[in-house]
Amino acid sequence: MPSLPIEQARLRKILDSRGNLTVEAELVSGKVRATASAPSGASTGETEVVAFSKSGIDEAFDFFNRRVKNYILGFNALDQRGFDSLLHEIDGTENFSNMGGNVSTALSICAAKLASSYLGIPLYRYVGGTAYGRPPSPLGNVIGGGKHTRNGTTIQEFLVSAQGGSTLESMITNAMVHRRVGEKLSQELPGCSVGLGDEKAWTASITDEKAMEILRESVDEVSKERGVRILTGTDLAASEFFDGKHYVYRDRKLSRDEQIDFAVSLAREYGFYYIEDPMDERDFEGFAEITKKVGGSALVVGDDLYTTNPRRIAEGIEKKATNGVLIKVNQIGTLSDTVESVKLATRAGMLNTISHRSGETTDDFIAHLGVAFSSRFIKSGTIGGERLAKLNELIRIEEELSTD
Ligand SMILES: O=C(O)[C@@H](CO)OP(=O)(O)O
Ligand SMILES: [Mg+2]
Image (tube, rainbow, N blue to C red):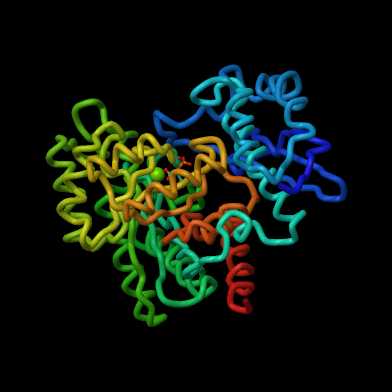
């Protein structure tokens, strides 16, 4: 194996889009240098790795300086699997609670970026080889609530994805829907305060039904004006409003069975194609019931359910829980574990969606992973610099792919 020994390694603190501290890693070998940063979630899954050690980012940095740095100096950055195993070994826990999953994520992605730049190939090619389909369709949040806002809808995300055109065309259409929704919210709800949530989706103190009505009207109008098909979707992030017995909405409480019926109606009556985390993250069986009923026409996606964890995905496959999986590197902590999850899901016939986190950085690596993983969607908002950093990079990749 050719060698690219890591000669310098450092971490620095940077701010994410919520104004919280996160980490950027920098690795150097000879004349090659790479940086990578890790985002943070707000509606985190129970089985995600820990973003930073229990006492916070300072402890994680201290651990890096005392325990990690010396081990990775001299390591061959072209050996991604070896590098990721080394990170696990040094950390010594199941959930990266010593090193911090955000530190391992930043280092792992950084090693891949260093290698790809040394080899003179783009990251998507380094990770994915040479077989690609279409780049993933942008899937963006236009109305938001849950943990991403103060007083929005109970459901965390109402999403759109324009189909058929180029990445840029799809981004333009999605942004038009976003604008239209904003106009409708202020026209139809005078006096109601309307703002933007963590992912730059509109937020207002309205019921989920009202949000769905505004979404439907906006999508129908923009779809007609642009002559494009626009898929709608939702991330319920249902664990966040499950109290152990009921799903507690702003205006009503649903039992488990009623929640299943509601999720089914989202596909059948409201026409949602994409349905993420409709049930509590422990309820594989509930997911399976929904998938059995609507999986032929809709994508039922596990995010908090799987946390990009191969063991959880294997359980989901066995129980036929979903036909889709959300992929976020910092839920599992390394690129190699992420690749394993994607392979497992793909072999079982699941479609994957590569995803941003609600607290993002301007790092655009998920655009590359979306292409490398042949993701069906890339969930990365509709507006906002840190969201568009990924989609704009996808425009560049698409250009490159079309001239191959
Ligand atoms: O639930 C999700 O899918 C994500 C991104 O939209 O949110 P968070 O990063 O807060 O987990
Ligand atoms: Mg989610």
